[in-house]
Image (cartoon, rainbow over all chains, first blue to last red; front, side, top):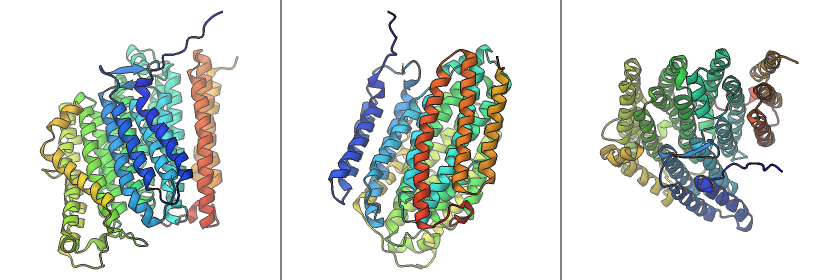
Length: 476
Length: 100
């Protein structure tokens, strides 16, 4: 009798994902047995994230490709796993007090963050379109629920609905693109796609190009790049603030990692056909993101537009698609992680029950009342804008030099111009904090967890700005 | 034997119906159904490509699509229900608390 050949199952490669899934399910079960206070679940979740990140060192010589070439562990994926572990831990730390204050007494909250992280790790390690699709869906479905987790709040509901409908719509495009690429190349593996394209074995060039365009639309939706960004400001505003911070960093990084793998590794043979389209998307994201942010008065919407423009800068690293591009993507994402969580940490600290203090005017005079909070906010905003000596500057510097290395001068000029525009609205917040009189009474909720996040973020922002060397060496 | 093109044209038409529906209709449930039509259009083309390439990847892929679509339905309907409890309507135009 013939034996059915089973594929090699490499549990060591999958360890981070498995450990995290077990922890997430453990959190779900434990939730049933504890009372109203869910803080213990937060600690367990953070422990799970730490263990999972450490598990990613399971292999000695990298890269290791497993599951028939569908899953890969390389430096790129390990670095991203660490970014996800840090961002999810910071999001959980920010949530502990926020959830108490807003009355979100739901244990599934932490489990969903962990499941979302599982999806993100899968996304950054997969080299097969089926896996990429599953990763994106694990991330998205968890986020739909997290965005709407304040069930009695109409804004939260609206955010969840908009995110869900547009996200599912985008999934349709992404899938149709994948189907067409499968049809044209006869394989779902990125390595196979790339070699088929280079060898000229594509069955129909038209179907391949159609697939690439649809994939671009799908990925564009998921990273909130213009013109597929309409959902971002509404969802960022309506979601609970820790989740907003989480969404702006983790899932975006994960989808960008998959984006990088698919376009820079899979489609480099037909780069000439998609390069121009991606450039247009990147430039539009930067301009619309920055110009949109100028008009905002709500701080969460402002940060949403700013994150759209940052997606634009990150797309430049994909367009460059050289080794410096990959490492600059990693480094930029790390700097963006610290600054974003810092800003949202301050926003959460300044909010209190019933009044989240989200209008920019409410920050008037903060610099005199709470000089330390205002100073850290100023550091984060300047870093987001890209002012030396903060981390944001170094991140931008590497992304731009990766693009310059490949000769994309116009693109870099436009990006630098955009950095200059972005200072307008970042400085506007700083002007409110330091140069206007106080309008509302500040009653910051100084929880130790949120202050810890801000402290970590300040340290990270300054450390990566002044001594970026060791981390960049790691990223390469 | 039916040519591959016919399947692809059918899937293209279904996909376009889905996209149009999402863009035109204002009822949350109907929009949702149109998204499902898009996903099933994709399944048709996946299976057709799979059959004509003599492989199995496409079939596995379409199973995954169905699983994910089912998960998405459950989450989507839950969101619609929790929304309906706060505001008894499913007309998308009435959800406009946040606007730029």
